[in-house]
Image (cartoon, rainbow, N blue to C red):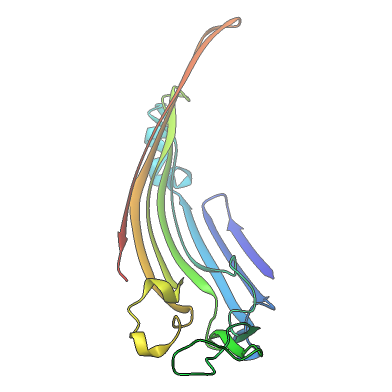
Length: 212
């Protein structure tokens, strides 16, 4: 994993993150994957053209920021890429089924999928941080968009012909999109050295849509 950050004059911020992850839960060809993210920030209130608002105590701080990144997950059962075999079941010795073979079958009980790989989510976030009237009001507004893809779907949740003989293997076929926003407002009023009042308000809205 690696991280690089850069800031200039308390105005501009850049951050880059990257990680090369591995998991024994996958077949050799899909065991490792690269994930990363980036973020930008601009503190507008530090610009010279903003001095009028700061000098008159209208807006103490105003910052905009945005981030985009992809992360992966292996939070599921291991060995999904391997077939499973078990002992069980007997065959008939006669057409009537009156007697059966004393020996049990050694048979495939679960079909593996060597193409199983990381579940992933791409996240986008845009936010505004603010402080007004010498800290009387402060808070943030954020908008986010998430896309989860390559979600594992169980074979039992998919249509399978009866002649196939068993459930089809788990596969990375699912996709879900999410979007929403978060609003936070903090109020802080200092009446005198011994008296202060404050309050916090927040609201979150989120929508999920199953694509597949």
